[in-house]
Structure formats: C-alpha cells, structure tokens
Length: 142
Image 1 (cartoon, rainbow, N blue to C red):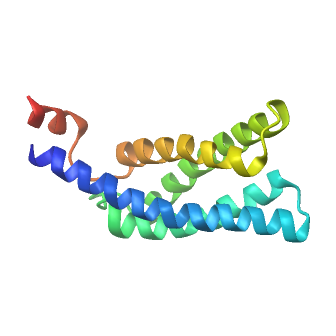
Image 2 (image 1 turned 90 degrees about the vertical axis):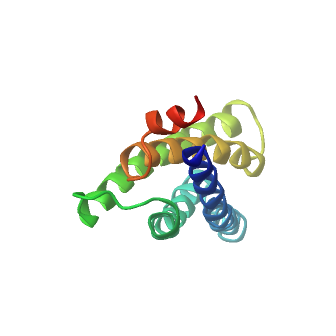
C-alpha cells in the first residue's frame, strides 16, 4: 500500500501544479483572444507554451523524481517532446470542439485541458519519473 499512497500524493501534487498551469494557460488564452483579437488557436499555442515552462519547473521540482543517469538536458528534451504532442492534442481537440461542434472555445478549453492532463501525467510518469514502476505499485495492492 505504500506505493499506492506515494502515487496518490504524487497525483495530488500534479493536480496543484496543474491548477496553476491551467490558470496561466486559460487566463492568457482568453486575454490574448479577447483583448488583442488574436485567433483562438494562435492564442492557445502561446498560452500553452507559457504554461509548459511553468509546468516543467514545478513538475520536475515538486512532482517527479529525477531519473539517475538521465541528464537534465535529456530530461528537458523528453519533457518538450511530450509537451509538443500535448500541444497537438490540445489544438486538434480545441479546433474540433470549437469549429466542428460549435462549442465556445472557452468551454472547449476546459474539457480539452482534462484530456491533455491525463496525457501529461501518464507520459511524464512513464518517461521522466524515477519513482515506483507501475508493476511495483500494482504489486503493493495484491
């Protein structure tokens, strides 16, 4: 059960970092779109990128343990690759929700954030975290 408790604590920390990153992303998206008239997909790309910088610093400091043998440079590159894929998911889903389904971009962004959040946690846990392996955690449950 110790592994499950650590995983739960990690998910909670990820949630706190995510709420702050979401506030940055969502606030900047609306600000750029509504105040400066920047098209929502361009604003979404800018706001997502800014929030990723915060997310990297906070996640790698407070959420995920550094993997031994992985340089900080490689860690950052893996983080960026995963984030670029997350940006693609973000923008495709945002476009589909807004332009295809006709839902306001502000509402669509909330749903899209939940989808990208799952992508971020799972992929960062797999590729960047030096914590418990998934098999070790499942072994604690049995």
